[in-house]
Image (cartoon, rainbow, N blue to C red):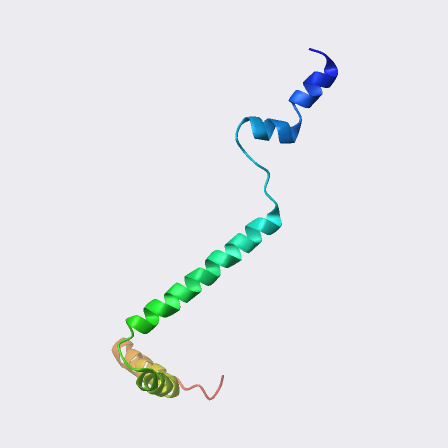
Length: 95
């Protein structure tokens, strides 16, 4: 074999074609990933709407109440833990 024929035989694109592979661009992979992510978001949102336990306005009200009461639950937990461990309850005034 001469050098030119050997160089052509070992060229990257030709070698990939011979073994049945192709070159991919990073941009193509990014757009494929974004497309799959978008499809996943849409499917997840659809399933969430189909299997939601309550109507939207009821769920928003429950989430709003939970958000408002989030501090009280932590204080109640802290008080209970202080009693169970024998430690005096702490206050958040110094923090």
